[in-house]
Length: 219
Image (cartoon, rainbow, N blue to C red; front, side, top):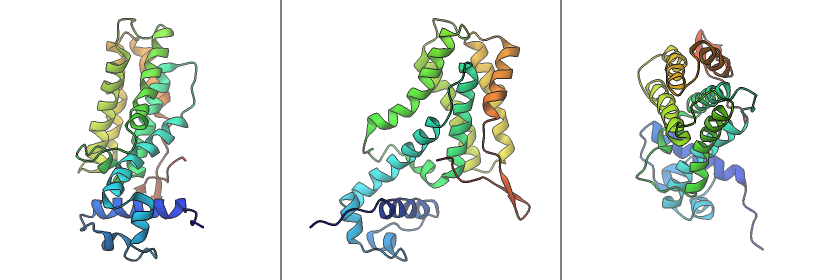
């Protein structure tokens, strides 16, 4: 009888690989399982080998991003919801900096491209709702605006999660998203208020040893 696969082992190996990449440690079959308590055979059992692990590693980043987006409640204010999705994006990047670094490595295939694309669809649908609410012009391309919003989030959080800038840099998201949405047709004061409400959905940091440390992800 075949043994039932343990999801915890798969998660352990994915997170171990992400940590090794971030630390720039050589990632081999043996170095991956060293100290984990599992054998090298587990890599074949769960991923079919190292190539499969690379795909799973990148896919996991989008899976966790999608899980975070799924927890963002839909309100009667679609602009607020767009900003809340940005807040969730930033939280995900800071909660999973190892996976965040790998998920945009286009040199590695994804296990499920459609599932990864589905994360962007959360933003596209919010833009469409904002159009239905009369906040954005009807001639605005929902996909283009969603990509532009994502680009703002990605650019700023990359400078913080994997770069040299302080967490306060992320606060630039609010005026930048506001400017983008006003350009799409929203009224400035109303837009700013909506963006601020959405951005306030971020998970606040906790202090450890006098330093700000971001909380575990909302799963």
